[in-house]
Amino acid sequence: MPEHLELPRPLRLLRTTAWSLTESAGFPMAAFAIAAWLGGRDAGLVAGVVATWLTAVVRKIATGSVPGLLTISATVLTLNTAVVIATGNLWIFLLHFPLGNLCMCLLFARTARSANPLVARLAAEVVALRQPAVHHPGLHRFFQRATWLWSGIFFALAVALAVLLETEPVATFLMFSSVATMALVAAGTGASALWFASMLRRTGLRLRFAPA
Image 1 (tube, rainbow, N blue to C red):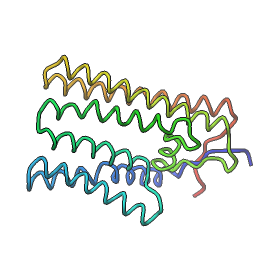
Image 2 (image 1 turned 60 degrees about the vertical axis):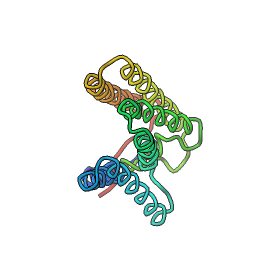
Image 3 (image 1 turned 90 degrees about the horizontal axis):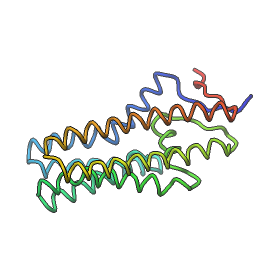
């Protein structure tokens, strides 16, 4: 059998991705909404952090590891909450947008040259991508370089949002920051997908769905 990468079948892929996003974003958002309604903004932020870390602890106990996306969510949310509660200042509150992206940049860069780059971990955890049983240098180089790519994307976002924060009014900053984030993430996702397809052609690897 030729070397191949394997994805779950579409319905299982959808469930795996949805659960990963629920862990990293759904639980903290729900905790924030309920606690903020009962006790105000700061209570909501703390509840979101607690929900994220509790999910990570349960994951660690149940499976022995914590998904990368959940680790990123917990780290960024903790940083943002600490900044907001410590200052209570609107400008400092908005500062967490570029700080959060800088944190993401460092998280990706930290693993880019390692044996387990973060993009490879996220591909395995978020979409359950299975790599060939035998180590494939071309695939590993792709994951390392894609991790550098995403580190660069988050660095560009951090710089862009810092400039917007310094030069634009709050309403304009919030609008432009949303547009910039969506545009760069969409561009990065598209570039990663095209790069992945090109890597498959160059290396002769195949991508298939798992057997039913």
